Image (cartoon, rainbow, N blue to C red; front, top):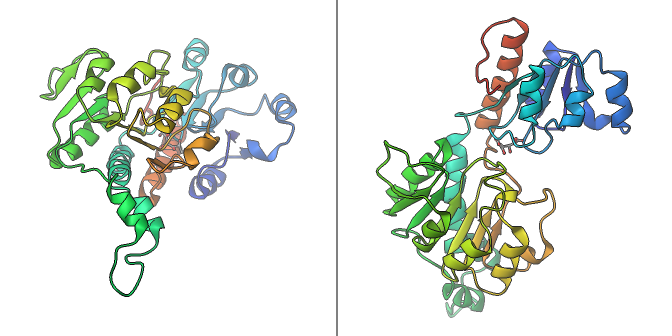
Length: 317
Ligand code: 8YV
């Protein structure tokens, strides 16, 4: 039996259903009782970036052999526990890289060029005399150029690199922070994130969430970025100290933010909705039909490989 932790994709659900006995965890109101009752039949978990498998869930399923995650990020899975128990873990790298990078650029453009606000302004002219509407005139004082801005990337992995390449095409000088310098990269490396923030105008968070990167965007980083700086987050909400970000945006100490992820998803801090220097998205970085189906195929491919004792397609543990 396969346990799916939350609704992710109807395509994935249908395909799993064709191949395995599928339990939809969200359909059971008493989840603890459900786990107890089915502890001897569940051999696989399909989780995602929101609902993974914590130590409690893993411990309660003695027959669990594999967790196939419908995500590249694995912060919602207790990897140490899996290692310890010999449970295999797979994710969905590569197939989503381009989409997430595209969305990062989309967020940069939407935040700097105020695309959503311009759309919401709802008109070109106030009257037949072709006089510009007030909203647009107000907006124009706040709209910023993207081309040529200094872009700093936190985490130069697959996604960070794809963002860098795109930003380069906009004529942006690129620099990055990561645990260690990438020997084959020509981008400027900072070994300290505060130095990176001090030397860029757009700071893009694109690293995995670990204990080291939790709240990597803190008050100091935000202050150094300053009122002309913009933070873009397509990584994970907890990368940013959210209350600090919100107060900096409210007080105008930070220029703007484009956020696809939040610290306590699906909660979004109420104050952000009232701001016109933010663009807020509901965690849709990989959310295209093509990519989500490719992710689903990888999830299924990994499960099939495991149960047919073939090599896993994208193993992590
Ligand atoms: C997904 C993600 O949003 O891959 C990741 O790490 O955050 C996303 O692609 C998510 O897992 C889909 O439900």
